[in-house]
Every structure is written in structure tokens, then in C-alpha cells.
Amino acid sequence: MSTFKKITHVIYDLDGLLLGTESLHAQVNRQMASRYGKTFDNSVKLKIAGRNALDSAQIIVDMLELPLTAEGYLEERNALIYELYPQAKPLPGAVRLTQHLYQYQIPQAVATSSARRPFELKTTHHQEWFALFECIVRGDDPAINQGKPAPDTFLIAAQRLGTLPEQCLVLEDSLAGMEAALAAGMSVVVVPDHEMDKQLYGQAHQVLNSLADFEPQLWQLPAFD
View 1: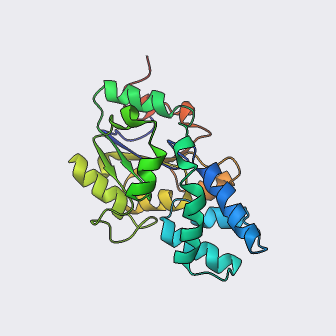
View 2: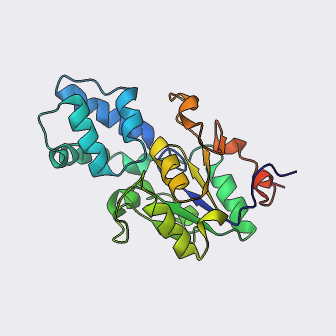
View 3: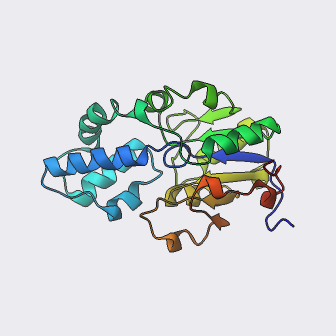
């Protein structure tokens, strides 16, 4: 018996949900902070998770009181992290779930705060996998007025999938992403970073430890064979 509403379309975040890039981000942000005698900790990590690069940089600069503009921070950070992005690997359960739903012709999309260039680097070795998605909305898409936690990214994904928000399930890892999905009027399952307090995600319809724990039949989607 399903415990959740019937879902027809699924939308995924990218970083920290499909691909394990969050550890790369944390590594580089810690390195950047230490350059200026500061510490990048979980309080900062929570604030920036799910947001676009410029918004994240501004939060880091403000919280750590760095002698940089947000643009200056990004320029330094990108020189480090762009070399690491092609190393990004799928997170547990991600490939299995997306391939399973694709086989059952469930429309799927990616809605990410990543801009086109970093997205291309992160997916360098995963072209065949990302070809499964009917549409991909990136953070620098001209149709987006405001990034997450505003709902724009998810609403655009639903529109391009040709469906209504209430028919969509969003899979996210961040607080900003959860808030964006809820603001869009969508159902949301959150798979938080293991270092984060799960109680922060109480508004989500479901909180999981891993995408490997996701049970499609609870959302009236085809069960795993």
C-alpha cells in the first residue's frame, strides 16, 4: 500500500545526490579558507548547500569575513576545483534508480544549481548515464530568475517535462533544494549529507540515508524487480 501521493515524473538534484561532488567542494572550500587563516565548517557548509556558485561564494565571504569579493573567491576556487570535477563518481543507488525508471519510461529530469561549464566537467565520464534524462536545467539557464531555495529551477524542469508540479517528485540532498521543491508545490525526498542533522529536514515527505534506500512503489512508481 502506497503511503505517498501518486507520482508520474521525477526530478533530481546533481551535487551530493547523483554525483559525489560535495566532498570535493568541502575539500577546496577548506583549502580556500585556510589560505586566509579561517575555518570552513559545517555551519558554513549547511548555508551554501544547494545554492548556485555565486550565492555560495557570497555566503562564504560574508560568514568567514574574507578579504575578497564573491567573484574573487570564485576565481580562486574554480582554479582548484575544475581540475577535480571529472573525478566525481555516482553516489550509491543513483545509477540503479535512474536506469530502472528509464526502463519503465518514467520521465526524469535533472535540476541543478551548477552552471553549464562545471556541469560538463562533473559529467565528463558519465555521458551515457546523463543521456537518460529528458531534460537538464542548469543554474545559469536564462529562464531562471532566482536560484534555489527559490522554486524557479524545479518549476522550469516540470514545464519542460510537460507536467504539473504536483505530479513531480524531487530528490534532493540540501536544505535549499528541499525548500525550493516545497515552494514549487512538489513532493520531496531528501538524502542529507551524513554530517548534517536530519531534524533540519523535517518538512520533507521522506528522509533517507541513501538513494539505495528509495522504494519507488511507495510513490506508485514501478517497484524494483
